Image (cartoon, rainbow, N blue to C red; front, side, top):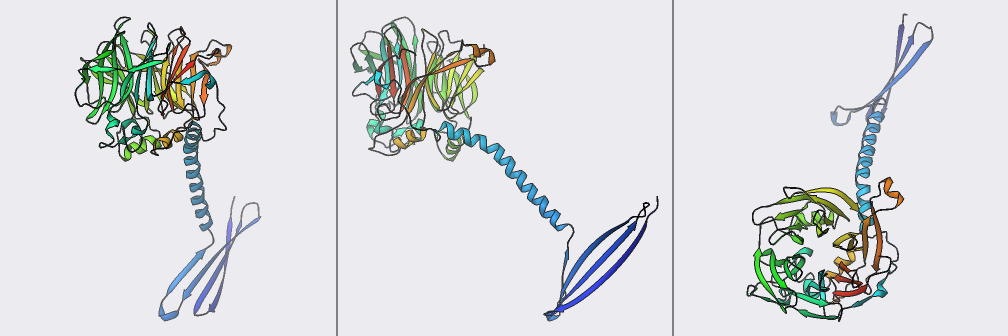
Length: 453
């Protein structure tokens, strides 16, 4: 195969307004072996400015420029597509978990509940089943707002109202509806009392050791307190403080001086805490503590919040508040935790509570958490914070064979106009009692367990 090239050029010049424009048109004719000519034309325009003697020349080549712009445009489209693909699922999930897509909230089973008057902000509640008595950690709604002291919400006013540092432990009897604020013998004089999550270790049916999170201004600690059921006072035993227990939220008691404790944030304050919250970073952890050994048992939780365990502590449940779900963990021999499952939900999970009769977990959480935060940001105003209580149990239905391991049932729902900002639900099936603890001014509610729960 042979080829012949025949080139011809045509040059045209024009002078307009002191500028000379030269247009060169080159035509190439190629004759291949098929004797069919192939013609290609290249057009180059050169503009020369002769004013003031300058020889500025501008050359426009029609080939290559459009291809370069197209490549840049394609690159930008690819970047936008990648960013969108990465961020859209996060934004959609976040909007769902924040309840931004939630329509009108229909109350469920709230008619079964009544408030326990004069108790506020009972963040955590546990029922001692042998006696039927409930123990609650209660505070004051107003003193936990933005101008007060409550580190879990980032409220760190060291000079807040003195009542901010005078929370109390309450003993409540569901049978007669009476309660009493417990005196704690030998508690360090002048020490802050800002109680949060807690757990009970039963040495016997009547001898109890309580582990309370206490957010002192000098640093958050765990208070160890003994209580003998039937007595009118509790006895302070000791304070546990450790560098790894930095932002504690809740506890699972394992022995006389051993426990798991959740840290709900990596950062106590500052811009990194803002990033941790707003981007829902999985930076928090669970700590194992004993006098012999303290270690990070599990990390990578998006705001580790409430905790509970099954009857023999072989399964530990940890709420991921900002992660809108709950971790199902198994302790290893070295006390670290292995994640067995993560149950994804569509609300900000707070405290889980074990039903010892059925083994089910009653989990309370915030369906529109931004309303919860708004309620704590306005001193003197009431809080309207919707929530729900669900029951998580092992799935025994036919769909368990398709990977659905857990069954989730709605137990109680409120739009925040009656009960508001609930954090926990403790059940006693023997007495048909469910106690709801809230962050609100009406801090404790007694309910009848719904028939289908």
